[in-house]
Structure formats: C-alpha cells, structure tokens
Length: 198
Ligand code: ADP
Ligand code: MG
Image 1 (cartoon, protein in one colour):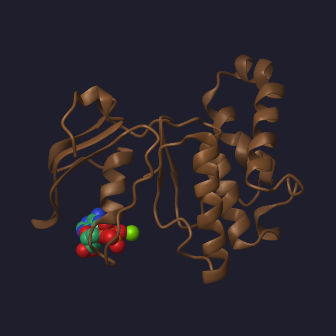
Image 2 (cartoon, protein in one colour):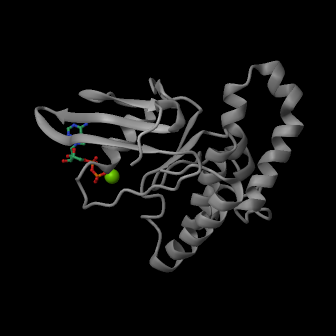
Image 3 (cartoon, protein in one colour):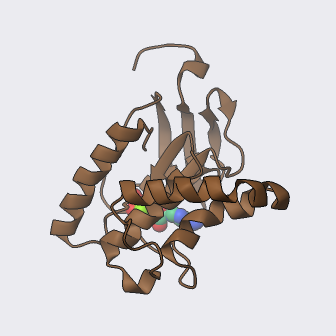
C-alpha cells in the first residue's frame, strides 16, 4: 500500500497484535482502507477475522498497535462504524421500518427526534426501497426470509451514515443462490451510495 498521511486513510489498522490467554490470534496486522474501498478478508474459520472486526468496531482493544479512523484512535464503538452480523441484528418485536428507525430514535435527543421524525422516516423508506423492501415496511422479522432480514440489517446500518460499514460474514447463513444474489446486490448498493465496506 502506498504511503500517505494517516488522515488520508479512512481506516488504518497499525501494527496490531491480539492475544487471548497468551495465544496469539492476530500477528502484526497492518493495512489501511481508503474512503470508497470495498475490502474483504478471506481466511479459514478461526483465523481471526471476527477478532479483527471487533477491534475495528472498538468492542475490544488490541494487545498492542492501534486502530485509527481518519487518523484518530477508534476508541469505543460509535455511529461512525456500522456493523452487519451473520444474523440476529433485528429486533423481533419491531417491524421492518421500526428496526431501521431505531438507531436514530435511540441516538437523537427526544425533541430533535420529534422534529426530524418525518425526514428520518423518508430516509428509512428510501433505504428500504434501495434494498428492495418497499413492500415489506410493516412486516416483522419472522415474516421475512433470511436474505430479506439481512437487507433490513444493511438498511439499519446505512441509516446511521457510518464512515465505514463492517460486515462479518453477512451472507454466511444464507443458501448459496440467495447469497450470490445478495453479493451482487451489495456491490450495486456500494456503487450507488459510495460506501466504504470492510
Ligand atoms: P474467525 O472469525 O476468522 O473464524 P475468530 O476471530 O472468531 O476467527 O477467532 C480467532 C481465534 O481467536 C480462535 O482460535 C478463537 O478461539 C480465539 N478467540 C476469539 N475470541 C476469543 C476470546 N474472547 N477469548 C479467547 N479466545 C478467543
Ligand atoms: Mg468469525
């Protein structure tokens, strides 16, 4: 990777080591991701992919080294990093649209939420159209297929406008045909919205 100032890189994982009980899981990981890049990590089960994502998310700290977002230490999880897991991102008692609105509802101060509700709702409907769920706004997760649930999870992450979207085997629980469709769809969404995906 070319050398440039730390701030030019959206994400910089710098000389990261991670040990659990003296077992080395990540051994000097160093890379950076620029805005708009779609970066994938491939490796066998247990090689440390989820661990790396947890460090970037800020859920755990590296044993040594640093994770930088736009040149600043990533710190604790924050809305600048969205995450989509393999499954279980949705609240079963909330409808599709309510699941997508939740992040905003929980992070905006009450009066601002009241004031912006219509605007946020419009954005949520637009994003759900983007992931082709415009007809399913009022369904509940149990009424959706696995692929549809993952598309809600993507809209749920996107509405917070994160600087980077982290995905941990987001389509791993889907059957092969659906997975392929989702991968193609994800590439389209990435291009259309200019996101940074890791
Ligand atoms: P992957 O996502 O690539 O399948 P993981 O990051 O989940 O791999 O795990 C990498 C290794 O770290 C595994 O050997 C796993 O057992 C170990 N590991 C992950 N989390 C912990 C933890 N909290 N405590 C101890 N060992 C862990
Ligand atoms: Mg994993």
